[in-house]
Image 1 (cartoon, rainbow, N blue to C red):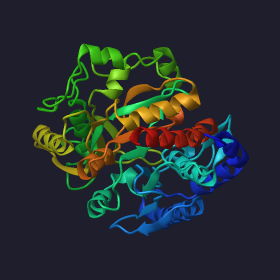
Image 2: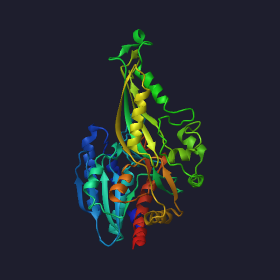
Image 3: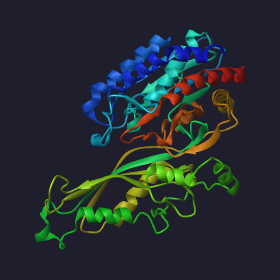
Image 4: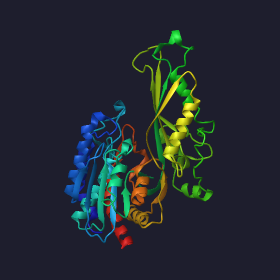
Length: 456
């Protein structure tokens, strides 16, 4: 393919400037205070798709935040790639832990620091710029459709309705997604599996009001103490989850499959050093790669109650709360696991408290084939630009809509991400390498090229 690197080199300053403008928009879907900003980000994407050469570009309303759709149909006889991404981002809290303002991008050591730099604005925007490159160099070899949503970080609750109502519009041969990571900049990889998700909030109520901890302490159940005990009881001494039925449908990998999974390069000491931990932790009988890729988990994402302000206040609180996520593996159902959690949590609550379990959102685990024309095209594209074959890996995160696309559209997805696990996704100081951003723009046109050849 001619001129790919030259075009990127000529326009990379503009590409980065445009990305920085997008990153400055605080499109936090979880917080209604940022509602106008989320809509502003949708308008930004609409405009950039039009500038890049897409037609039939529109902002499609939903009951929540809109979906930006655009397409370029050059020949009905050619294969069609459906590009999915999202323009919403995680909350930036706690702001005080950021080294620089989260919505004012800063470049340091070749990395772009900003909320959404990697997840997913930086990775999503690669596709728009790669599309521009293919249009401007007359090298677009497939039809392309874009579906960029604004609710991925809150569960994509309205995307399913949109997909079901627009099956004809969304007809394609494959879904291409860059919302995952690779092993390292010198070790490309492609995710071939993702865990599912069940996300829950729990509320534990004791007395009908906050109490003086001296007058009532020791005589009345403290909701924070009780909640802590209940959560602690959900793992046994082997870090095995104790919810009855939780593992009933878990698919166990064969020894050969586990051996293949562990061929991915991984240095445990580097892993610990990067995180500043003395040792790893997890389910007995599995190593770190397996724990984060093929095993289900239960983790507390936030816990609060009582007095947390400056100084002291000797209070026995009326309520305690926690947010809990469970990552799921193939054959586990998010609805079933949510129901099992609810039944178990209610059962283990002592008589001195009342509990409420509030399901938030979920998604199903997926495994994608490594012998499909789309996967082979992605692997060949990465081999072309990185100079080595990518390694198939299992991702620990969740992208709930991958299972949705398969169910409703009958389409498999290719998870060709360019981020790194060390990019601090969902954390303060999220960042994305300029190398990775530009390498993605370089690699995506090769995917289109090789996929069109495979399908011709």
